[in-house]
Amino acid sequence: MKYLVLVWAGLWRKRVRTILTMLSVTVAFLLFGLLQGINQGMNHVFQSLNVERLYVQSRLSMSDGLPLSFLKQIQAVPGVRTVTHWSYFGGYYQDVQNSLPVFAVDASTQFAVYPKINIPGDQIAAMKHTRTGAIISREIAARYGWKIGDRIPLQTSIWTRKDGTDTYPVDVVGIMDIAAYDAGSFPAFYINYDYFDEARAFGNGTVAYYVLSVDEPRRGPEIAAAIDAKFANSGNETLTQTEQVFAQSQIKQVGDINLIANSIVGAALFTLLFLTGNTMMQSVRERIPELAVLKTLGFSDGKVLALILAEAVFLCVAAALVGLGLARAAFLMMGALFGALSPGALVLGTGMGIAILLAALSGLPPAYRSTRINIVDALAGR
Amino acid sequence: MNPAIRLSNVGKTYIRGRQKVVVLHGLSLQIEQGEFVSIMGPSGSGKTTLLNLIAGLDMPTCGELRVAGERIDQLSSARRAAWRARHIGFVFQFYNLLPVLSAGRNVEVPLLLTRLSAARRRERVATALQLVGLADRADHKPGELSGGQQQRVAIARALVADPSIFVCDEPTGDLDRQSAEGVLQLLQMLNRERGKTVIMVTHDPLAANHATRQVYLDKGLLVVTGARAA
Image (cartoon, rainbow over all chains, first blue to last red; front, side, top):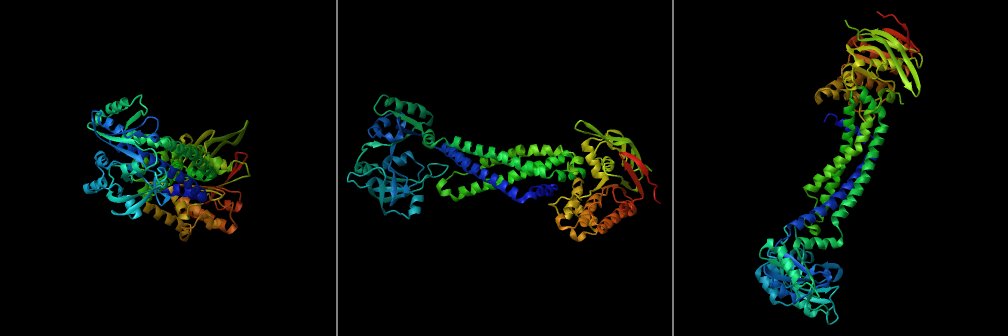
């Protein structure tokens, strides 16, 4: 600790340069925290997904949909407990900017397959009995100020109605708390499939995918294989996956988040290595006479090396802490949007480890150089 | 009593490119404890090289060098560093203070190598600055002090760890006459009142007159060793 004054003095010798270098490190670690936070958060969500649920979609692509007639055949597969289905609605409210995560579902089976969704039984019953009924998550209700009894002129960017309009008036009959995903909530807006399917001008009698719960989770792969075998060589071959794999494949349609995150962060940190290395090297070069004075006063080569390394560590670790802290703050501020996604202890720990490694790699060459300083030559200005 | 410094046939040769440059030729010299010795001579005569050898900053090519009771020509680099911290106080021509540290912090630097507590270090720094007459300038950065004041801070830094030998390389070379006189009186005080051995390289005969003995070097040879003053 007593040497801190020398480390501090060395760092702030060129104030502007140190601040700019620290800013670069901060930005790089902010990027690291944001990307790895998303990455780790997603992995956490995937791991917490239910293993009792299987998703059945068209083998060709999700957008192709499957016939509703598959419902009974899937239900008949041994081990299948309950089957429900989802269809994308592509909904928005008043303006396409106000997009809503609307799904047309079968209210009589939806909540049996997703038992952790918290909603009073009478509201589920109301959905079943009200053709235009809608159950919305509490977040959406809060965002738009909607309550039970409100009529919402829901619009779609996909499913034009038979009458040529694109508005589906729905009545809010229930508000749910979605805790189906332990890692966080995904806001949703459910409408009745029958109402939707009857009104739409095309695609009638199809669903986007089926979701089913199984009696024994360990039999999931076997049941998935049985379902896919049932529809093999048909006009609508199926692809049945666990909820985890399904969610991951959805994300991968956007891109391999892990690869993208690692590539961006890797490039940023690699550049940073040269930047901080150059800063430290320049700093040592400018201070050769001062370092020679320290050696003259009795500082050993090892002590001088440790001082330079400590400067590099301080520079990198302090800036990395700020960057990671900003990333965490950013996730906190966007909590409603990202749910459970945030840089956790693992990301923070990894970030600190990288910062120390960065400091060691960028600080070691100039630190070693400082040990090679010849006192006599340095004092003579040679 | 053992001499503070004893050089026996000490030589120093530098290799500059393909050339061998002999700077000191088998020099023998003895300096007693409590002496104030000035080393004079023309440029290139080997004064600073001799001073660097005595201070353990450089190693002789040949000969035996005993300072403060230690054969420093046989010490490793790390042990010489520790030895310097214990025994040698340095005063440079251009002060060589660390520009980003205050005067007080500069004076404290040698004490960082000791086991003294922060409170004891502060105490010692205050005493050293008081001794050189700069107690009120502890918080000033070197750039805020005059040349003479900076050199006095450098002297405070040299004496704060209480070394037995002060090595001064043209300590008045960058100062006006008045400031130079102040610095020389300080060195004289350290020598007379505190019994410190002072070795001072200088070009200035007036500065050299403050010493109790004057040594002359020319082309790496000791040409005159002045008589010890009473």
